[in-house]
Length: 101
Image 1 (tube, rainbow, N blue to C red):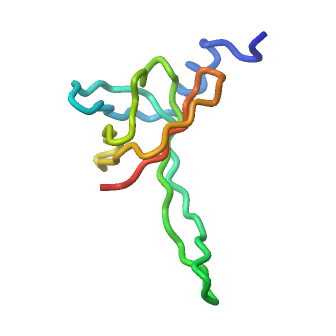
Image 2: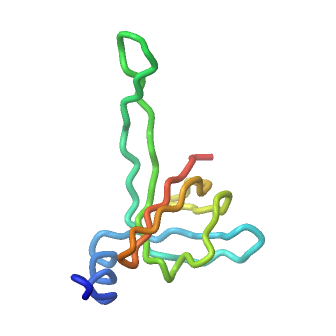
């Protein structure tokens, strides 16, 4: 039995989401609602000071991105990103790691 319903996920995205344009390779663009995160990460490259980089990612409903694959494209707030890793979480949501272009 699911703890949350599809309606709960829809409310969550409506409250905290932004619009992204998702374009599958060889397909047409469509607008979807995502939770966008572009946090800084410390990367240890073996020196005395850590290197900082960004890791853009989105959280979205499975149904809006069916067939998503590495190399697909998303445009969020005017910035273009390429899909690099797709991680469905088994609850109807998928986390997608992006690469800035």
